[in-house]
Length: 113
Image (cartoon, rainbow, N blue to C red; front, side):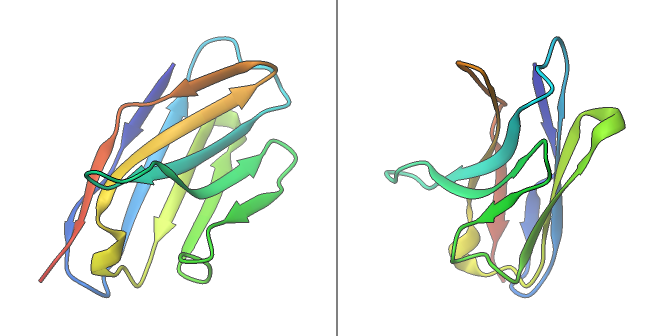
């Protein structure tokens, strides 16, 4: 249902772009977004975007990350700028509609010099 791409190793201050494409039957009213998890930590919200265009960001990424969506491709992008070592985590794409929640495979983002 969800295929994520992007991620990798980047130096502090650098940028990365994550993408996630949803396939299959998707209700037109939905929420797509990104969460992240560090070893031993809870999975936390990074950014979400509703099908209506409303976005929500974690305070820690506001002003640095931007979520956008290509409706024609059912793909959501997360542009991550000014990356910090604290952004290092496994990032997961999430899609929800009606009572359904889908998770993509995680993609590792490592910010290190």
